[in-house]
Length: 575
Image 1 (cartoon, rainbow, N blue to C red):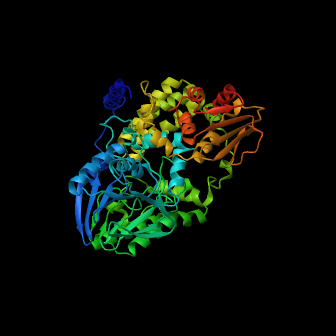
Image 2 (cartoon, helix red, strand yellow; image 1 turned 60 degrees about the vertical axis):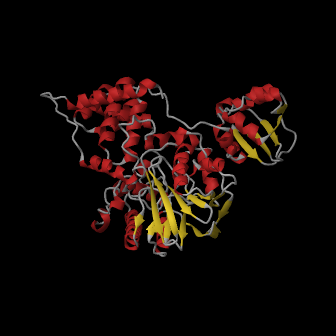
Image 3 (cartoon, helix red, strand yellow; image 1 turned 60 degrees about the horizontal axis):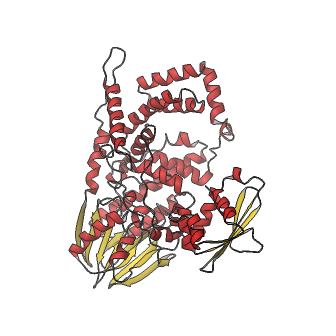
């Protein structure tokens, strides 16, 4: 980020504050103190940085909270310790490990991922570099599949939307927290994900360093989620299936559909063990059998309630935009601190549940094949008297503090390509106004980040450094999946090309470009227009920018049959 970015952005915030605080006969708008935002600030105490130690019936458990987003947990074993979740970066993992070593300096014998999210996995590489013997890396059998998906075909959009949601580029004073942690620190170091070497499908009972560990597949926030049960310790590590805020049954950064009823079943499975300690991967531990059971029961009941009432109203024929106005948690549980909407919301959950069962079509014939965004804006503009009248309505909505309406009006003017600079300036004001008043960090950070993107000095979001070690963890199949979805069809009109890859590992792949698609095959049937011989790592590094393809060809790291220029042109089709 440029050094002048924060300064300029803070100046724009200050200007906005003055705009809304100015007193005149025509308009008086003041920025009030909002109790919901004050509660969000208070919520930050839930993850103040610390390492807590608990003496359980089975031995000591250390709990690192406030380092990045996700907690890291260390279980003391016999001459070896076990890490559950490895933090969001090697930067944070190094700080956590230093603290853990002061408490017990035995080697780390195993790392357990509760699921695939980067805030639980990207710090793992640090532990491998600090141990004489490589620790086991344990996860559900599908964890690497979902990780490769995140690292692969949807990486660009997930990275941007995550940066908005977690506010990774917001000035320090504007980021209160991210609901389940203080801040996401993935970009502070190269991502340190390490592929699991020990996996299971339904359950795994194993002894590591004298500790009896039971792992159970527990779909919930992710399909690969697991929970850890330590029977002697009477301790449960639920991953992200419970934390002290309403859950993200849907996350606005985007995700595969979350199985809500599967989530309920997973919580019921956890309840069956009647834990005395719960060490969640976000927010503080829950200590005491009654406290633990109350939290698990309230959480599962809230999730089931939202699910069941959404389905009931779906079956009565209501559309999702109607259902979100009709579903509200019952009074018996709505004030639970575990259900404050500091992460997920009931409204977003309703929409996701509807989509999960019935898909994107809400059932309204008017919305099956609607007008394009531009066509709708043109007709709307004509209806109100033209673009100039639409712009005046936008200006008035800003003065009236009708900011959601202002955003929707700005959408129409942007679709019309009308007075873009003026519209974006007003849109920024609406985004800032709503964002600053939102007590939900996901929404708050997304709106403030979206406003920041409209600032002239914005130059993109910080990203993690790429390294040879990190690139090596990306599978070759992921690489070819990325190539497939990056093909620019306009560059291959009437092209019919077959390029074959013969890797030194013995793996072969072929990409056939035809009908403006890139068809990937594991079988290489000669003849090929271009044949490439190299190692998997060299190919990955060339595509990631760590190795210059021209230099790699010149040095012999990549050997091409069929013309070096033709191969470089082939690669250009995927930029």
